[in-house]
Amino acid sequence: MGNMFNVFGIAGSALTAQSVRLNTVSSNLANADSVTSANGQPYRAKQVVFEVRPISEGGEANGVRVTQIVESAAPLRTTYDPTNPAANKEGYVQMPNVNVVEEMVNMISASRSYQTNAEMMNTAKQLMLKTLSIGQ
Amino acid sequence: MPNPLDKLLDLPQAALGVRATRQQTLAANIANADTPHYKARDVDFRGALEAAMGGRLGGPVELARTSARHIEAKGDASMDASMKYRTETQSSLDGNTVDMDVERAAFAENTVQYEALLTFINGRLRTMQNAIQGQ
Image 1 (cartoon, rainbow over the protein chains, first blue to last red):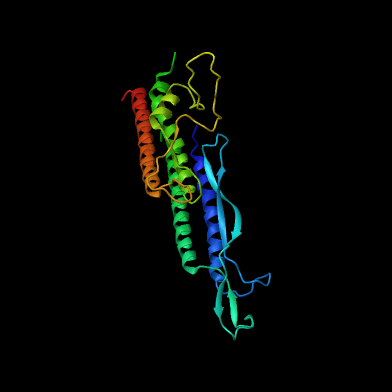
Image 2 (cartoon, rainbow over the protein chains, first blue to last red):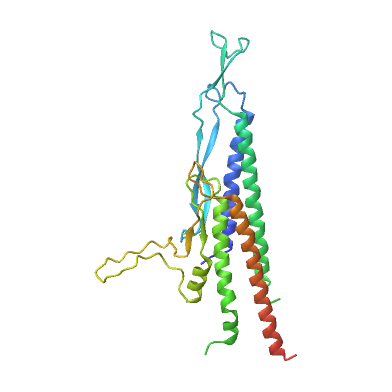
């Protein structure tokens, strides 16, 4: 049978997942021009992978979780900049494979989803409070 | 002898339970709007309410048997008979069938229906109270 409390679990898991997504987006945008990262290579865009996460035992309440964060397989951007210390002999620099436009779209999508889930939680809270005041 | 008070509240109580289940299912759909291969589901309200009123608790999906010699086949508990998959309006490349507009509308509708049921229950309780006080 349904339990309204599960809505909090579901929406909460979605909030967590979306904020992880938002984190990777901001990391990608911040490092859009990072020629060297911790491993000495140009920064590679990171993407989250979402997966269904069962909340209740019956399997009717399904939240969401981030299973892994993968690095984008897109080719690195190459720009001509002989003055850059990281430039090779021909004067080309390997830049991160972050697609800024894509990341912005990703950011809007994540923030909208976050908003929706927060709203959903609020609605569930109001319903619970009204249920509590039955007969008063 | 069944308590008339219980009888008065049986239907709205069962309906409230079904509405809560539906709210939960819709919440799951909205939460998984970005999950690849997630299939949106919804509660068949009439079926679920009939099951709740009949004392049956949804129950897993079963294969109908037309002969006694057929092998009995029961689905696992997660396959509730009153849970149906949604027909998708626009297919997406990642196999996700959540249509945010449909889900949001259904969520809002379900919220109002739930509140209406609460109002009904409150009204019935008030009726009983008036009867008890004899005013």
